[in-house]
Amino acid sequence: MAKVKIQGHASGTGILTVTAPNTSTDRTITLPDATGTLLNSDGDGSSLTGLSSFDPDGAVTINDTGADVDFRVESDTLTHALFVEGSDGKVGIGAAPDRELTVSGGNSRINILSSTSDASQLQFGDAANSQVGRLYYEHSDNSLRIHTNDAEVLRIESAGRPRFNSNATPAVIDANSSFEFLYTSGGSKHGMTIACSDNANGAGMLNFYRSGTTHIGGIGRVSSGDSVAYSTSSDYRLKENESEIDDGITRIKQLKPYKFNWKCDATNTEQDGFFAHEVESVVPHAIVGEKDAVKTLDKVVVNNEDDIIAFDIEEADWITGKSEGTYPSDTTWEASKEQIVPQAMDYGLITPLLAAGLKEAIAKIEALESENIDIKARLTALEA
Image (cartoon, rainbow, N blue to C red):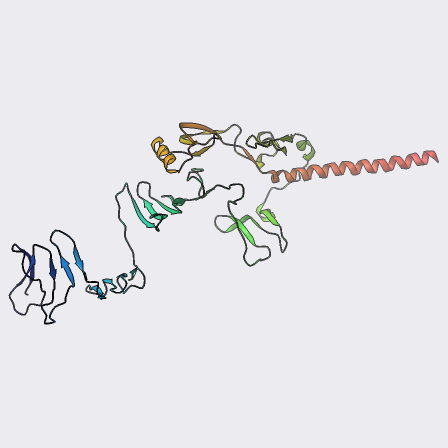
């Protein structure tokens, strides 16, 4: 089969015209060394005028006259493997475009490949900021990140854990958590809002399950009222080895309620409560954690209130982050820092003990009342 050959021409002269070979002899197309025009019409209509220009030392321009001419490349199965709309410049891959870029085909995909230490990105910008929004995959730690208004708002780590940041410095809050949401309230913003749009009675706003199907608690609307119920499972079918609490008063007397204020509260507002470690011996299942527990975090960023706001941050990255606004300018960096792991208490779990103690107290009161009635009756009889 005959071939079409393209080669340069030392003289810098000549016109390039592509025609189908009609013999078995190979045809040769000669390109000029200097700037020239490809497929320039010779006036007989056998070729197109100004379809493209060629500069051996520069760029190749197609449709340099600005004519309303579409550019289309066919493959063995597609009529529009690549298509550029002449009227508006829209580009289509696999089909004629209906947007600035259209990709069409079965299981369509776009691959953005980078090195293992770089990021693959899609950037969204405007006249003021060329990357005010970004979607990128960081190959160094295999995380997917989303930026809005030129700030990171979501990071999905390599293990699948999502971390949301709302107007806050991105940071790992707890390495053992499965979901994190970090925000700056500014005194008025809410961390999360859940609403039932159809105003349904008894709507479950937040539900908790064990093993995916066994419901063990939730937060929801109380019937048709304007209040919220915080519920935990208490079905008799889930319990065994039940017995009455017969030492309610004895154990209640061991509790030590205090008035106190939180150290982080600059107003020193007085509150009522317990110390978790003192309750642990009385109602152990109401306590989570251990007394005086601590943990050590490495390479930490510390704010002006001595709180750790990020860890596993290299000092060089912290310095860069301060200049870029990622970390506040008054933060400090430490190689390691000890942090308390506070004990916690579920105040609701002491309710059965309080109820048992109250029942014992009521029984004693009723016994005393009965004795008092009997004594009064005897006194009345004696006085008669």
